[in-house]
Image (cartoon, rainbow, N blue to C red; front, top):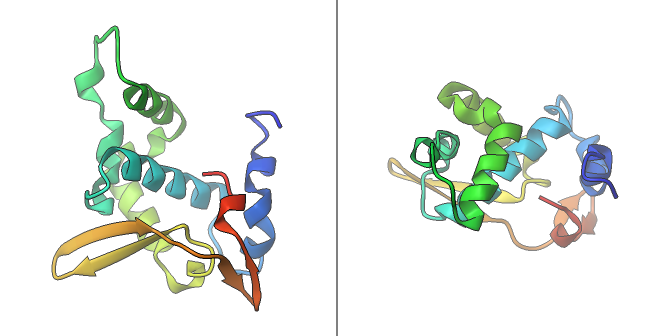
Length: 139
């Protein structure tokens, strides 16, 4: 599989996603999950509504060496730079949290009082009685 063949990346989720009425574009949904995945690697206890801060990276300007995760964040910044905007990130995250995506979301976002947290969903996806493993998805 070529890295640029995004249709192949989305294949395990595509059939399930087509059953969702008025769904956002699958590529946007996948981008949101990619951001949440990066957040889970770098700051698993962070508020997911502030994930846009991953893409500011002012601390890396002028550095000649960086860790693997910093390098990954630099690459993600070029691919997911749209989410540098607090508004765009929070608008898309709000859409992602809608009930219609419950069966296909890889991340669950909880809110207790004013504090938000997130976690990876476990178990198979469920849709119309059909279950398939989350491990089939590439984030």
